[in-house]
Length: 277
Image (tube, rainbow, N blue to C red; front, top):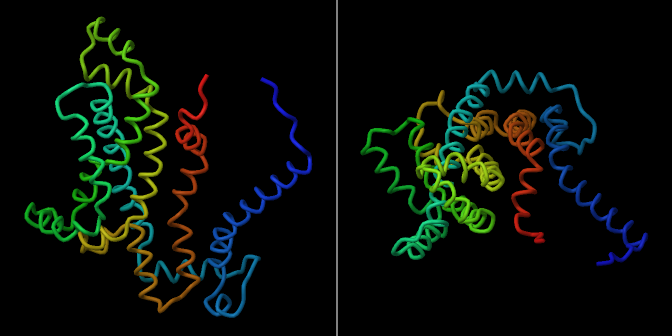
């Protein structure tokens, strides 16, 4: 099939439009970093495009009232196990829905998908009562364990397994004497890793930014994750924008690193099945 040569003017317009979109996407982050180096007075008086000299002053303001690095550690303790549990058990569930034929499979799958339609806030009061009854209030466990059931990840990985992993491969493993757990861990999970990695990145971002659930379930300030620490900065300093911007900048560093270093995995996972031979 011959590919028509692209018009140079159209290519120029396309590149110009993409550069414009890139600037729009990057500008808020750039302004956030710049404002984190400015004082509250400077931010309220003008829009700055160059760094200031108030970075350490804003940092001392934060550290004087809250331990932002303790919040950083708390967010890591919550997020990393959540992502690992979500990735493993969601892939296992997706494998079961994709390759096992059992009565009521489709109905059960639609029930799982139906849970995606229920807002998190709707079940928060009932979940709080359950956590209190189990004696897990003010612990990290109720923030981590529910990630075992991730309907969105199950849906995405199941579609990938259905399309990309053939039944003959599983049948060959069974003939060789492999058990179900060995088939999953040694064959299915490695082959489904593009989809697992993609959804794990989004799960990491969502869990790192979660504010409402920790706000309800955690009472000890030394256990607060980054979103709660940032909200406390806002309340303690009567809208000291420089300190707030610096706190937010520190908070999003892991998210930026994940997106930058794993962007190829995101693109590969989102374009699964887009090109067929």
